[in-house]
Image 1 (cartoon, rainbow, N blue to C red):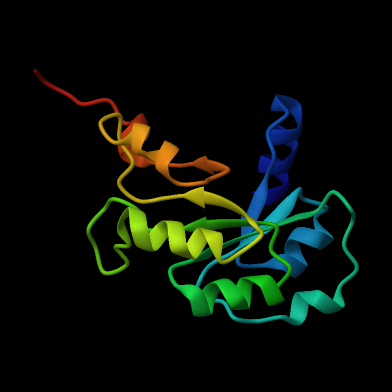
Image 2: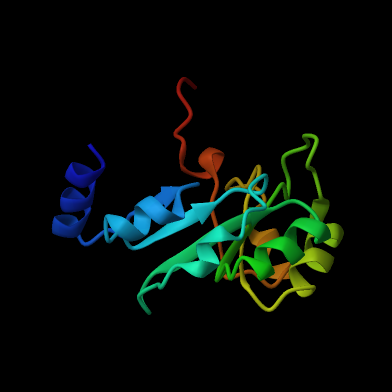
Length: 139
C-alpha cells in the first residue's frame, strides 16, 4: 500500500513522508520521514541518507527541540500555537521556542482565517491548520 501511495505521489509531484519509521522510508526510497515528538530514538543516524531525504519532526517544548536537533531534523513542527489544549503555547512562548532553534519552523494548532495574520508576529517558515482549510457547513 505504501508503494502504491509512493507512485501516486510521484505522478502528482507530491512529496511523500512516512511517519515514525525512518528505516522503512529509506528502504522504500521515499522523500523523507516524520519523527513525532514522543520518538526520542537516534538509531536512524547510523543509516546513510540521500541528500534529498528530508527529516521532519515535531516538538512542544525546549527539551523536545533539543532532541529533534540531535535527530538531525531539518523542519520542525511546533504546536500548539492557538488551540488551547495541554500543549498550548500562545504567541510569546511559541516565539521564544522558535527562536531557540535554527531549524525551519512550521506553526500548528488552531490556526484559522481569523488569526492567520498573527503569524506575522512570529518568525515561521510556514503553517498548517485543519480549521484553516475546513469549510464550515450551514449558515
